[in-house]
Length: 109
Image (cartoon, rainbow, N blue to C red; front, side):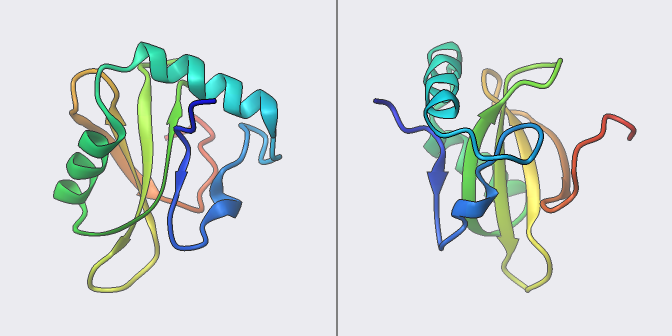
């Protein structure tokens, strides 16, 4: 099975479903399907995220929430501070947006 949700530094609790719950096998199958649609590799997405927010990658997963397919990359900034989620378009490699990693995406911003 293809494992696209790469987890670094004990950040396994970040890998969650849209409602915050862990989805197990269903999530892994969803990640595999999304990976087939992406042209960017996880390594390329990480590079784009760290170029936008220099630091250490803690987690990475593919997401589509009514918009383009993105890699959601959690980066702990090198100067310290709270983790930042950097969303990288999974096909173009462009950074779509950045937001605090612990913030629920409520589509209200």
